[in-house]
Image (cartoon, rainbow, N blue to C red; front, top):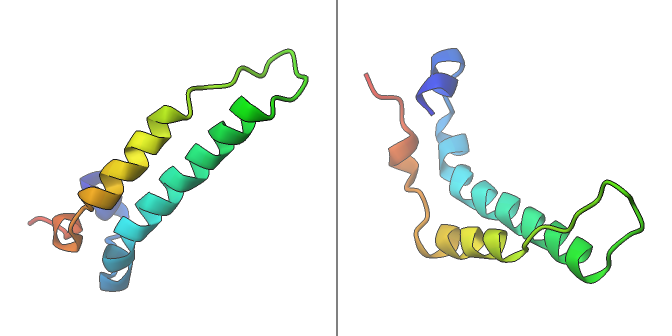
Length: 75
């Protein structure tokens, strides 16, 4: 966050919404991995990854969200 904030600090609204966006990202990756795991496609380069990883990430984000004030710019 410090490196990002050095270029462009997050607005208050962005800091407020970031925990929800982190959960949405984890959900998107979990669904994608579930899809590939349960409905594999024929592709020589495709290897299904464990969907459990992003399930755990999503559960962690839901039970321990990053507080908005933790993403504030530090002096």
